[in-house]
Length: 134
Image 1 (spheres, rainbow, N blue to C red):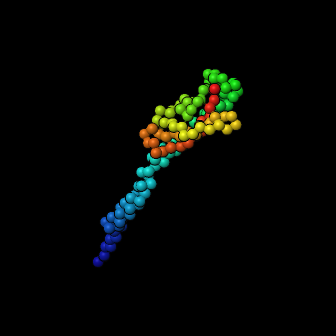
Image 2 (image 1 turned 135 degrees about the horizontal axis):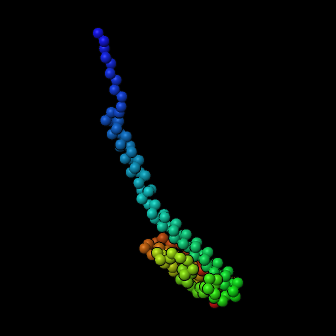
């Protein structure tokens, strides 16, 4: 007489349930980090816009200085306040600008400005606007 041995391989139902439970716990702890990424992206976008506005203001001032602060198409645009700087940069439809202070340093008028997303005014960034073309 021969004995037939059978061996089964695989996972039991208990093992599969435990793996699913562990994956659920890991997903629940990681989820809040991924949900909040949109506010981080909005903050980074506002900071990027502020950097672009500050750079555009500086470049415009340099172009105006070369032209003796006489407005010239494509070289020198008149900038009297923070709102005028927005005209130097494309893609400002979703952002709003406010002026926070105006100061004069070495005969150059500067405005401390603030930019924020129109839909969410809590996310802000500051930039410097330099008066030019006057």
